[in-house]
Image 1 (tube, helix red, strand yellow):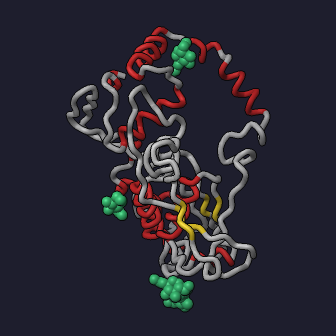
Image 2 (cartoon, rainbow, N blue to C red; image 1 turned 60 degrees about the horizontal axis):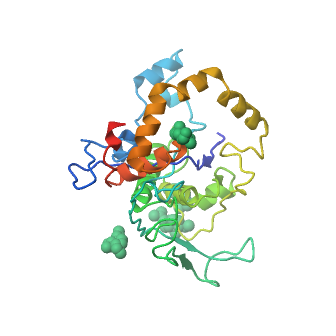
Length: 301
Ligand SMILES: *[C@@H]1O[C@H](CO)[C@@H](O)[C@H](O)[C@H]1NC(C)=O
Ligand SMILES: *[C@@H]1O[C@H](CO)[C@@H](O)[C@H](O)[C@H]1NC(C)=O
Ligand SMILES: *[C@@H]1O[C@H](CO)[C@@H](O)[C@H](O)[C@H]1NC(C)=O
Ligand SMILES: *[C@@H]1O[C@H](CO)[C@@H](O)[C@H](O)[C@H]1NC(C)=O
């Protein structure tokens, strides 16, 4: 009868994409559909009900009515975000990133104060340098976009639909509040300390559970030591492993192959600046998933 349940909001960057038809001038990006990476159709992520094959796998005449759901592991990415690693992706990059999504925060002196009445709420706006923030526009670098907000609401709804109800195949009652689950130890909320992951997890939680009027504990850690992402500080061995991998002949063979060298040269000429692989996914997918146009020549890659 024990409810074993933890919701961990994982970090990894998810982006949402879209490819525009046509386009003109110096830009031309033509693809007929968004890559799955863009998660444009969140219905694809709904959670199917258990079918007979699951029941059959129990064997011995045990049916779904005889068993009880103990735990669920759901891996969730943060929603669509703006560029993070490289604010000026290529020569002539002039994209504007505006976010309606904002953080509304409240300072608190006491760990057990019940609400926000005394201090009120403050909206954080990244507009102090309208044209010279990391990104041009009102989004902070790597911020969750409006679309990302909606994606996480959908994730929360899917989890709610699948796992909250009144019978043993569910994790909690349909009217369960996040506060009572947290107070009973059934709910633990943890993310790294990036805006997009904190907010993604909070949107998901608020969409899945009744959070009305509650102050919930949200656990995070200093980025410098947080192990939710590979961390050399916390795991020095990672540096050795990474060094071994990067010096591995098979890795060197691939990265120095003529294909990769040619690709590098070609992309360098399209972007008109040095191309670092780490930036490529960030730049291409934030552009493609939001219907922006890629530099001419990018599609050849
Ligand atoms: C987002 O902001 C834009 C510009 O301020 C506004 O036109 C639009 O209606 C807003 N969208 C939502 C969902 O609030
Ligand atoms: C949820 O519903 C049950 C029975 O319908 C009730 O006993 C319980 O108090 C409700 N819980 C909340 C938090 O409203
Ligand atoms: C959410 O929980 C609060 C109590 O914390 C309750 O007053 C409210 O009716 C609940 N809302 C819904 C939609 O169940
Ligand atoms: C491309 O070549 C440049 C110059 O040699 C190098 O600095 C850069 O790291 C290479 N990029 C990739 C993605 O291999």
